[in-house]
Length: 102
Image (cartoon, rainbow, N blue to C red):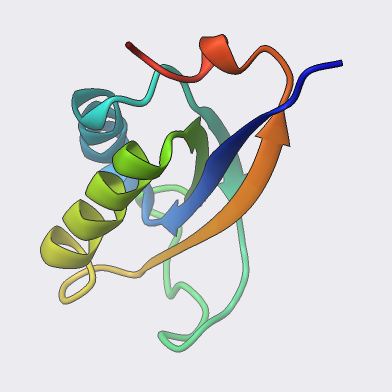
């Protein structure tokens, strides 16, 4: 069994950013993602309305370089004006070639 070190990025944000963030992930080098609905409460409180739909949780497994580019983009473009949480974990994956572009 061969494992490859990688990074798991988890982004939890408003549904209105879904398409934009997914596009950015691909532009920065992510080869795929997983998306689920998310609910909860944080520093901005509970959502006052669900008119735009529930929050989304988007996860992607990437290399260190791609992870850094994604994290920087989110910090620069979304933190100030949107409810966004992003965190990074070290992971080990099988079939690492599925997660990294050459």
